[in-house]
Structures are given as C-alpha cells and as structure tokens.
Image (cartoon, rainbow, N blue to C red; front, top):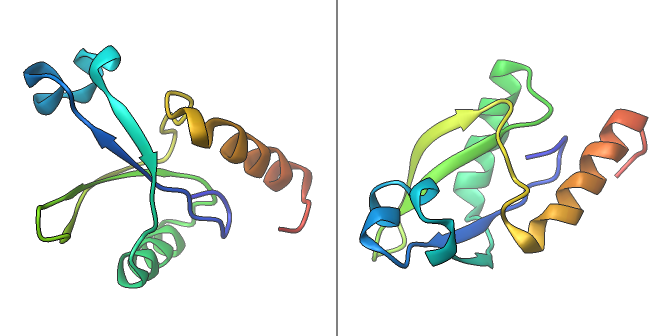
Length: 102
C-alpha cells in the first residue's frame, strides 16, 4: 500500500523450496496482479491508519477457498521483484514523496 493506493500480486511457488519460503527460489516463481477483496482492503486501510503508515508491504496467504490470512506487515517491504507492479509502485511512492495528489 502506498498512500491510499492498494497494489496486490499473487506469488505462485514453482518448487518445494519456494513453497516453504519464496525467497529461496525466485526463478521458480510466477506472479499475477490481482484484486483484493473489499473486506481485506478495509482491514489493510485500518491497520495502516493505526500504525500511521503511508507505505507498507503486507503478506497474506490465500487458501483454495479464497480465504485471505494476514501474515505480516513490512513497513520497509520490497516490491521490485514483482515485475508488473515495479513501475506503478515506484511511481506512487514518488508521487507520495512529492505530494502529488492521486
């Protein structure tokens, strides 16, 4: 999340090692930009407000039934490894720092 903008991507593990920790095998990963359910988005906005954050990377697990489970919040989380979100998030961060309205 950057300011009021929410960005999300699915990370699909392609090896046993990456199923345990996706950072162990980046080459096996597949990414897809996705939508966040409104209830989850509302929870993210509330959490960001409680902590007074304008940027954070949040991790969720999604089960086969589509239920989202919050894992953690990273106030300095990385995003550059998700190809389709790299530029939009970098632009949103630059705009936030410059005070450019969304």
